[in-house]
Length: 175
Image (tube, rainbow, N blue to C red; front, side, top):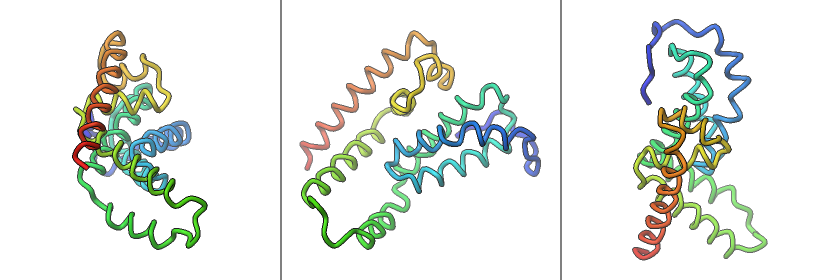
């Protein structure tokens, strides 16, 4: 995640609290869509806001910058595989002994895991555009956040969806 115009290391932005209150839910939402875990999404949001607090990003550009930073940070977390084993152990340890439909739960988790793996295999711009668009951002907001032309976002998202389907098929055939 690149930070434009880095401020001094010890300085914290005067507008950080206001931006945090305004954009926290969006940042967590973007990260949660990528990670599938609200707890991890909140960790990502913390990292993103710390970086923003040290940056010189204009306040008007904050929503887009924060959304892209959340998507990048979450994708990096998936790609690196950090904490995956710990997360799975925690889920297994806290799982209820009796589940209403164990088979459905297992299939749902496997499906989500496949989607996340496929998403991590996409080119970064496509993955971020797809995540941001499906996080509720408009084409114009996605374009501004990724510094692309608004007219190219529809194509980028469609290509990302096609690439995601292809990755899912590839992952399914390798199972």
